[in-house]
Image: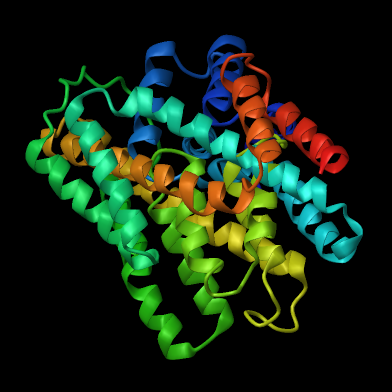
Amino acid sequence: MPSSAIAIFWIFLRLGLTAFGGPVAHLAFFRQEFVGRRGWLSDATFTELVAVCQFLPGPASSQMGMALGLSRAGYAGAFAAWIGFTLPSAVIMISAALGLTMLGNMLPNGLLLGLKIVVVAVVAQAVWAMGRSICTDALRAGVMVAAASAALLLQGAAAQWLVILACAVVGMLVIKPKAQSAAAAFSVPVTSRHGVVWLAVFLGLLLGLPFVAIALQSGWATLFDVFYRTGALVFGGGHVLLPLLQSQLVPAGWVSNDVFLAGYGLTQAVPGPMFSFTGFVGASLSGSVVQGMPAWLVGTFTLFATFLPAFLILMAALPFWAALRESPRAQAALGGVNAGVLGLLLATLYDPVFVSAVAWPQDMALAFLAFVALVFWHLPPWLVVLLGAVIGGIWF
C-alpha cells in the first residue's frame, strides 16, 4: 500500500475510533477534519460531495470517506479510508456477537430487553428526523404511508424490493424535484469508461447473485447474495438495514429476533458506520447457514458483502455525477424511493420492533423515556443505549 494510502488509513482510523452519533455526526467530523483542519477541499466541494453520497444507495459517511481517500491516493486510498473508518466498529460488533453467543443464558434477561426497548426509541427518532427532511409535502407523505401499509400487508423481502421499485416509478411520474445548483468540481482518478465498468459489475452482481446462490446451493453464496442486495438497496441511511435484513434472516431462522434487535441496539453505542451491524449479524448466524467456519470469519464476510455495492456504485457514479444530479427524472425517482424506504422503516417500527419489545406498561415507559432523551434532551445515542441496558437489567 502506498505511503499516502497508509497515512489516509491512520487518519480514518482515528475518526473511526471517535466518530459517534451516526451519519450526520460523521459528516460533521469529516468537514472539521478535511475542510477546516487539513484543507483537502473547499466547503462548497465538500457540500457537493455530501450530495453525491446522499443521492446514492449505501452508507453516506463511509462513501464520503471512500471518495476522499480516492481523491488523494486512488483506489488504494479509497480502500484505506474504508478499512480505517470501519475497523473499530467492526471489531467491537463482531466481538459482541461472539461474547453474546458464549455467555448465552448467563446474561440477565432484563439487559437484552432493555436493549430491545431502546431500539424502539432509536427507530422512532430515525423516522421522526428522516420524516422532517424527506416528507416535505403531502405527496411524499402519502408515498410514505402507502409504502408502510404495503410493507405491513405484504410480508417478505421480495415485497419490500417491489415497494421500493414502485415508489421510484411513482416518484418519477408525480414528484417535481427542486432545481439543482451548478455542481462544484471534485477531481477523482476514475474515467467515464471505468465508471461504466464499475456499474456493470454492480448490476451484474445484483442481478446474477440470486441465480448463482440457487445454482450452487452454497451457504456462502446465499449469504453473499442476501447481504449484497441489502447493501445495494439501502437508501436513506443505515437504519434502513433493519427492515431489509430482518425480513430475510429472522423468518428463515438464521438469527433470533431478540439477538437481532439487541445487536441493532448495541450498534447505536459504538463509533463508526452503522453498517458494522452486519458484522454482528453475520457472526451471530446459526451454524445451519455456514457450517464449520469461525463466527468471526462469517461476520467479516457479511460485512464485506454489505459494503461492496456502496463502493461499486460510488465508483460508477462519480464520473457522471454532474449530469445525474441535474436530471429531473433521477431526482424525482430518488424522492419517491426516499419516501418509500421511510415507509418501510415506519412499518418496521411497529412490526417487529414495537410488538416484540413492548408488552407491559413499564416497557412503554422506558421507550418513552429513551425517546425523550434522544429527541428533546439531545443525549448521545451511545449513552441512551447503555442506560437502557442498565435500567433493563435492574428493573426487569
